[in-house]
Length: 231
Length: 365
Image 1 (cartoon, rainbow over the protein chains, first blue to last red):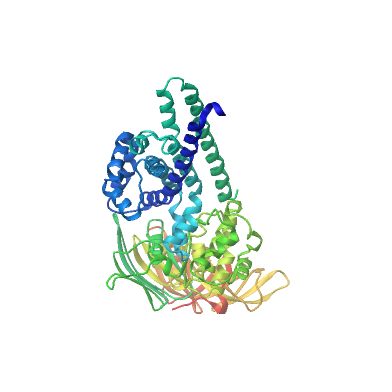
Image 2 (image 1 turned 90 degrees about the vertical axis):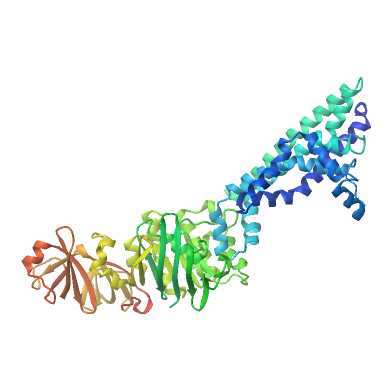
């Protein structure tokens, strides 16, 4: 283990931490957004849909730079966050989590939205006729039925967040032990002579993480689907 | 009136313009597919919003376009049984049954045991909907609607998706429901056999409008409605009382116009039954026939005669207080010299029976 070095292990731990918080904190917003896109009938639905997709299409570096402009200490939002709460995002691991969350958001919303669209609205109508308010219908019928989709969306987002590079390095730089995630570390190792071994090990670790995440999500989703259908 | 509906709604090329009152008992919305039956029920439920009009249940206004009232679906206090059971797949039968109680803030299990028993689903409470047959699922759906203690029950062809044996399995439960539930039922159907067994009141819809509405016995014995019901299915419904079960396996029934004998009817002496007599199962004889295998002959008076497009004539007959329909050919009508006010005999080739409401049930107006 020693040959990997402290720096690399820190990168793995930080990546997992960043991806965890990015996923957990964006999940509620992801569910609400997916529900609004799948079931909502409001003006601006297409605009919201476009906004959600933007990070997927824009160069990640651009997203990172926009984050820096907005959430940096001098930025309009970043300045307020610092003045009011003393919170700094730029060049901190929290900023890495924000960047990862935004980059992973389209994947998360898409998976959850597909699950919501697969729920028969007739079931929701039936629940309403039985006296359930919209919120209750959502919590007792829609949410349990889309649980597999939520799991799939969360795991996709987690895997994406572990691997996010462009926006992260632009927004929070590449500071070992503070903002250096696995991809940044691989990049850094490849810049110095003799770093290939460490880089290769990190490559293997990230492939394992990605495959593990997919396998876990498949397994969980199948278990939940099984429990839901009662077959 | 228990439920009064007076609404308009445009749906593309189709215009719904419906006005009727539904009294207690079962009001059947009858019409062919596309006549707007389901839309009417969805409007009452609040799932489809009318463009204008008013809906009131007892003294509670559910919708009034003029006054800006539109009670949301979940506050209308209704039970809706859909064509498909629409059970929640992730809940047990028990949780499905109790869903409406929890959602409307009702305490406890209510009549869970009695309702489950009435519908024959006591043994299924811990199962998941995926492991129910079509008939079982539909009975659970009926129980789920009942247990939310609705002020009105809406049923949109609840038997349409089922095969004949399953229908036969559920119909008796619906008959018990009519007798026991104590809340008005709006029942959508295009099946005249169901109408004859279940309806107390009938609303006939055609192209989004009410063609005619009234007591079921009046509408079914109305010659002008034969076109709508179809000559094969047209026929009247009357109430009979069981008088005696004879030793030779024949049950004696009393109707207002005389006595009927039928192969053993499984009903107690003194109980009331609904008797359906199809127009094409009635023969007319000028004199009381002798030497005939048919047991059931009623003396009748001709009320009216209506010629159709074909060779047939629909003859409306008065038998006691009841009205029968008979379909004969124009040639026989002429040969018999049938005329309005004339007397003759109705020979009933076959008669279908079903339980009637408690206390005689059929209203006649």
